Image (cartoon, rainbow, N blue to C red; front, side, top):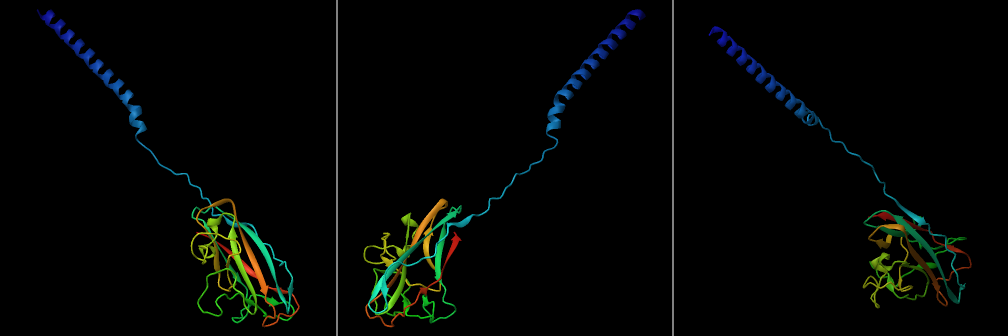
Length: 240
């Protein structure tokens, strides 16, 4: 009887050991299966990659000096014209503006053109208003005067690029949306005046043309003396 009880105890102990070993083994396997997933989630770190693209705005074609073409006599008059082109390259999605101003050497009463020899002011800034103060927009058509006059106008290869001031509605400038060559004439000014307004980038270059006009009437007052006359202008480019 005692021997049988001893055998039962041995069997129970064996079963308990086997069960414990099995449970331990299963737990150990579960740990090693779960451990990689736990390790992967323990640590992480975000980082960024950054670069900077610079703004590019330039005159890919610079305006050339202009030698006017045409015959002008000091007493009987005449007309001379000349053109210069410029092209703008920009990566600005909003586009750019170009303005022009003329050098007056600090003299508020001077004209844009001056005689190279004696500084003569006989060629006057274009005045389509006959002295009316406060009118700054281009005029529709060229208005004659008793004095010699210097004026300019602007067109662009892509007509929307030309500033609204130089567009017309067939009867007035700074109106409508027509770009008509040699139609809207502007007086030079020491204050920058906007001549081109483009609302998009110009990755291959956008071209505009400035045309200058010197008209001298018969028997002008004052009389331009025989010499070369020169005006100096500056174009300024601004990305929008």
